Length: 217
Image (cartoon, rainbow, N blue to C red; front, side, top):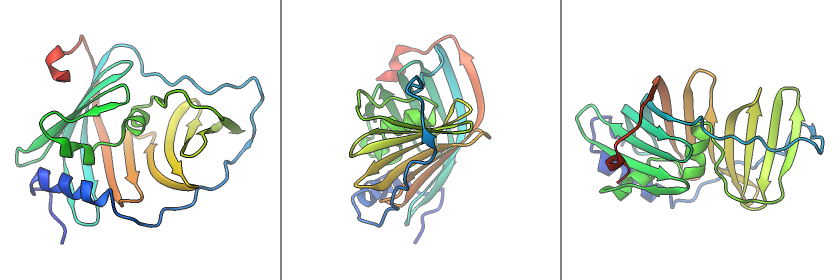
């Protein structure tokens, strides 16, 4: 039985957390495609543009039991802070704060079942926040750069014409989680093991002077 968008947010997020522990078959990661990159080529430094931005979006969450959609907003303070608010048509909602690679959900820990893990969330916003990892492999194919970063687990990042388009978490040779960024301001997150997805469609982005410090608490 699927719960429609008007259902209770806390029930949906509780279901997401339960599903995150379930076991399912995840796809095997294919070999990294492209030609070996020249030694002079380095991993792009994908940092968010300095300043403060408000991003307004619609969102759609699904898993095997729930289907939920609504409106939302991200308040971004570059380079490493973002607050996300998710709203339902019936007035319910929740929020999450990410600072660096630390995710907090003040007053509603179940929001962590909806928001992608911090490295993938930053990837969704166009940034690469993976920390210090060794064993990076780079390959190029025309205007596309692909990189495997780390060992096991490892991250696979893809840039097209210098723009980060996807980031995957690979563990045991299998793709566990993925975020993709389309050129049409659509972001798609998939937790392949838990079979849950979150799609964001960005409708407006605006620069602002700053945010009150209280939003990070």
